[in-house]
Length: 355
Image 1: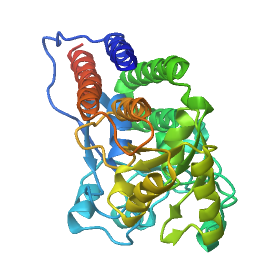
Image 2: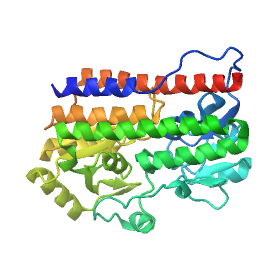
Image 3: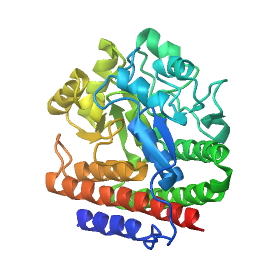
Image 4: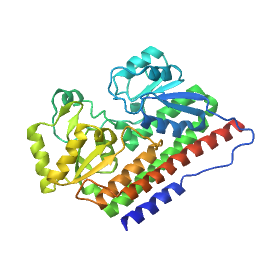
């Protein structure tokens, strides 16, 4: 029953996205500006604001360690050919790349950036729980959790708003177009947040406590109102033995019922460790998308997928599996959401250029 309700709600969310499918008669085809983004999640946000006026290129190839100090040659070339760079402000290679290619760029909070997300409301949440993981934890103690902050809806909106201003500075004639796209994006985010509240009425996930594999998953948890009390690993530093005992006890006694992992964690030893914890001590393991958005280019499509992964796992709680058929269906629905958003942006842009 829950799955049927969720599918209906998701379809409703798709329907409310306004679409115009009749292009202008004298429309100009093709993108105008090349925007290179650090990672795929930023690309989905940029595309929602830029629509058909931008061609988004992802600098970091899928599967490459995002914290690497050097980039492949093709990544540097993509940045050199771009009109605008959109960075996370977190990865070590971004600052040196900006200096190397000398292109205008956006970032979380950098003096040389033409726009900073913090000026539009972006913030870093504290690292989850009280677990201390050595020097690397202390390094981020005052500045908050920089891992995956773009997944929080308020931060996604801040990135979108900064993008709107930056694109308007490139082409003032399209400023109304960018403003309109951003307003539509904001409305869609608000509708998605209402969907979260509606789903919580049925699943009560906001009453649950969770442990994340990496700190990045905590931002998705925060978006869904789930409290993260600890994380298993940050960078190469793993949870201490004493903290691990507390985690095991919490899973065993049910005070923590979720372990939240991501596409990145699933491919690493930490993901295997999370799987073993659930098998040995109980709880439910949920796999989210946090960095690699393959097949789901739009921010809201990915977050909708993540909400579906959560509710599907809760339907099959008490283990490590979800309903594969339901998750495939949900990925399809999320993909439609992304396609609708892209088509909408292209059509509005073509109309704008045709006027």
